[in-house]
Length: 186
Image (cartoon, rainbow, N blue to C red; front, side, top):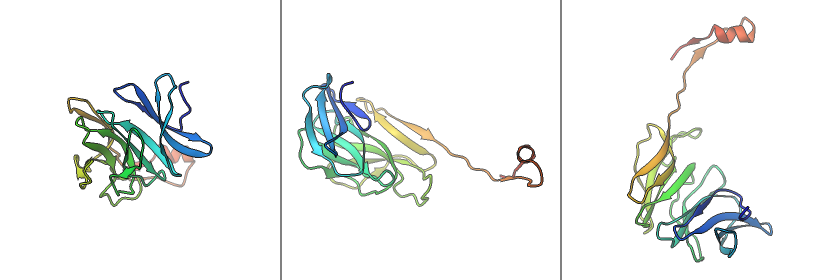
């Protein structure tokens, strides 16, 4: 065990760990050496969920996703500490983030722009560090989650398609028989 963490972690190219921990009843974003020593508090975080701490490729920034577990946004903070800066105002379902190789922006998965409240499609979006508006990278034909970007610029993401159909079930028999006699309508 390297350190106590309340979620995932990330390792910088310089060899430091970033994670969220609970200390003295408060959530903190910390960095530490890979052996768990030299722990530095980067940000005393607020209440709620804090996920996906991600080092920028130049090791100057740490991006993360705070929220209430359903409505999240993307924030960044200097790796040396300071005040966190909010990059998005989505207040939507988010599922992972990754830095652009240039360290000047972030790709993240969000239900931004989707009007479906339950099981919305997640698109990949790119948001620059300069405060400009995010712009979409994918369509909403499927959900794209957990993006990752190689130093060459090659991006990967999990693509999920959900399919829902309508079935007609008889209700006059035993439950197991009713299922076997079901008819697919769509």
